[in-house]
Image (tube, rainbow, N blue to C red; front, side, top):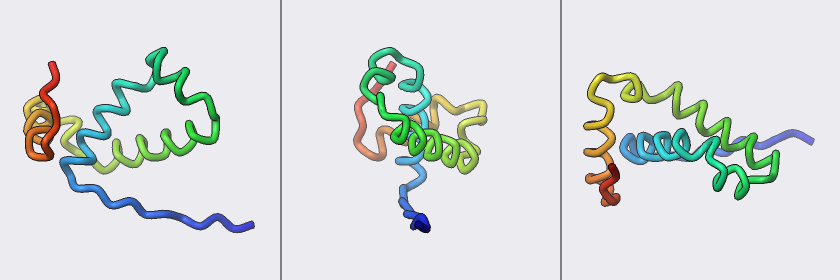
Length: 80
């Protein structure tokens, strides 16, 4: 059976915030216990890897400021 691919479109701000959240959550006990299905992990790793390759901002010296600005633009809560 051939696999169909799916395209998800995010704004740059959404992608940056999601990438940061995934990186903070992966490896945490709460997240790991929530995502017990290996098939789900496969998708999460694919999304995370794609974001990492697409977002040059994650390597910028002002990453924290860019992330905070992105959160504010999309109406997210402030984080420490």
